[in-house]
Length: 128
Length: 128
DNA sequence: CGGTATCCATTCTGATACTG
DNA sequence: CAGTATCAGAATGGATACCG
Image 1 (cartoon, chains in turn cyan, purple, red, brown):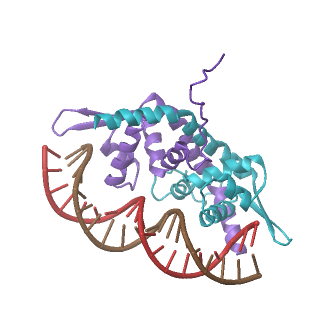
Image 2: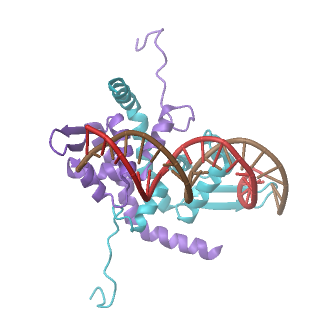
Image 3: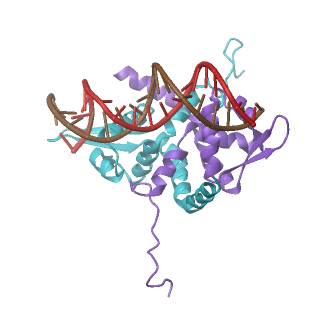
């Protein structure tokens, strides 16, 4: 016996369903800063200021917001070291590392196919 | 001799650079509807109305906008068949198929790890 | 240094109405 | 069916100022 008769049926998650919680999760993960923060952390734990420099152009607000969201989801950890001034380090969790693998692929794809996309855009714009 | 002296240096694309065009491309691809449209098209060419049903909750405006953007980037094709009423089909290009592989992984990750994320969120919220 | 709070311009998005 | 145009409200994101 692997399940009781009263247990709710194991509902399959499916982002195509507007009501499925994975729809919102997919939406949250589909974010430029999420990708860049995670990929940056592949190089090891880093401080807020280091990430800020690395993610050229990100505002403090967006960086903090992104880090909080990822921390809440359990994909990164936030470690505070008492000092003056205080030191805060962010690092990938195993869950976050697995996510990073997939979002990294999107970044790599964009960099690898930028020329093809630029060409396609030029042709499309020339037509219209 | 592997390069000429007058050729522009082969600039490496890097999304961490705010000025790099891949930053904007990554931003465009990091979109819920982009992911869902591409993944839906894995099942073969589909009409606007079919996609609309499939992507539960998407407005016509957002769907058209997403399709146009993907078409311009060369990742999908738009085929119009003369008829009454007119028939329009969308399909993945080889370039789009390669992109779909990577964005599909993000959707799969979300569905596979929804429970872990929900648990992490509950713990985080309980703390604060 | 790391973060929060606030203000405000811009962008986004859904709803609605209309066209070929 | 597929798409465009428009408008109002929501959400986003940057700049700024301030705190521990």
